[in-house]
Length: 145
Image 1 (cartoon, rainbow, N blue to C red):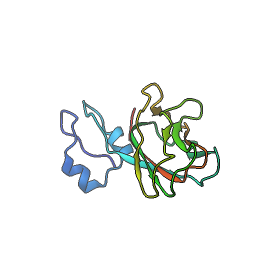
Image 2 (cartoon, rainbow, N blue to C red; image 1 turned 180 degrees about the horizontal axis):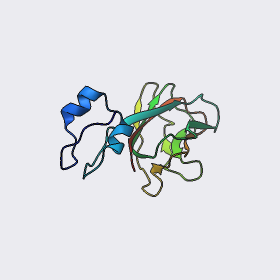
Image 3 (cartoon, rainbow, N blue to C red; image 1 turned 60 degrees about the vertical axis):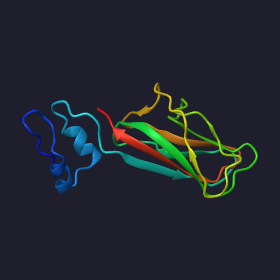
Image 4 (cartoon, rainbow, N blue to C red; image 1 turned 180 degrees about the vertical axis):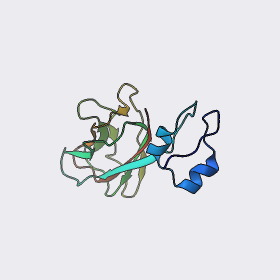
C-alpha cells in the first residue's frame, strides 16, 4: 500500500505511522521533493575465524546507501583485529582497529567512502575481518532511487 501524498508530493507523517510504511514504500512514494527516508539496520555477526569475509547481503532486493555503522564486541579484541565493510570489490569503509576493545564495547565504525557507500539492487555488502575479531557489525542504511 502506498502512502497518500499531498498535492505538493509530500507525505504526512501521520499517514506513515498508520499505514505501516517501510523504507521501500517511502522511496516509491517520492513524487515531489520528499527528501530522506526511513532508516533500516542490517547486521552480521562474525564467527571469530581468522581473516574471513561475512556476507550481509549478496543479492540486495533494493538500492541503499550506508549512512552509519558501528561494531559491538562479543569477545575481547586481540592481536591485529580489525573490521571493515566492502561491496565485494571496493572498501566501503576504512578498517577499524578493535584489537584493544573489551568484550561488550561499542566501537564507532568511522569513515565511510562516498565513492562506494551506495549498494546497487542485486549488490553485495560484506564485513571483512583481519585476525579473529569477535563482533557484530551494525549498518544503518536508507533506500535510494
